[in-house]
Image 1 (cartoon, one colour):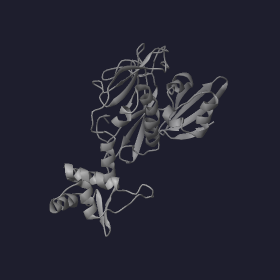
Image 2: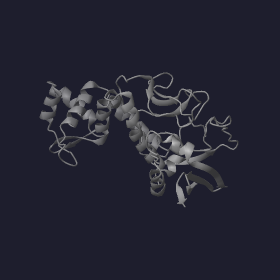
Image 3: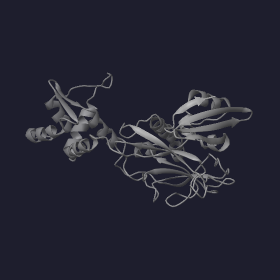
Length: 326
């Protein structure tokens, strides 16, 4: 399957998507967005859940609309997918809350620009200087970490030179309130949580079910600190994950699948490695001694980890799940 193709859909997805388009059309009006925001701000944040029904008159006053009939028309367009009407008033639903938080997070505002901003973490491959790019063409909306001295972990058409990572960026407001270094560090928490849900089979964008399949380079030969000419990466095995609902299909290196295992996490921490922080790439470049495809059907991969005189053997299946750690 072409990575750019949409994943196989659940039977009900197409009809649900039609309903979703109609629902989104309902919020394409400034007054309706103001209604959603007013309901969001009216929540009782000292309670859990923070549900607080807002009467019609109070809601209209919060929105600041004098024409009651016109206000009622716009409000009725939101009832159902975004707002619930109760005996005591109107309550914002989670779908409406997500729209408001997306606006507050600056998802639709102008984003910052990072153009070769230096960061303090040296390249895990060559030790060279590393820089940070964001909102720089042609990689708009992606946070790019790249080495200025070597090929990085990937090369080829459509990839920035010296690429060490290319990930979803935080919402713009999260970057506007941080300098480049703070953004770089915060991204490990933000993106790391996404990786964890992906590995667990849950889409971080829509919560749809995700499946995975291994991608093995049969002619892998990265040479000495360079990318393989065949697969154009330094990595022998990747896992391609696909969401059956929204089609999100990231490709993740195999170490992200086993570093979350408690035994493996402890192994790294005991030896001074932080597999979830700025030096995460050292896990791949310094500690993976061997990778062996034990069987192809069913797929089984054995990964040998070595640090100093200590070793672990991790076995993964075709979905990237850890079968054993010895």
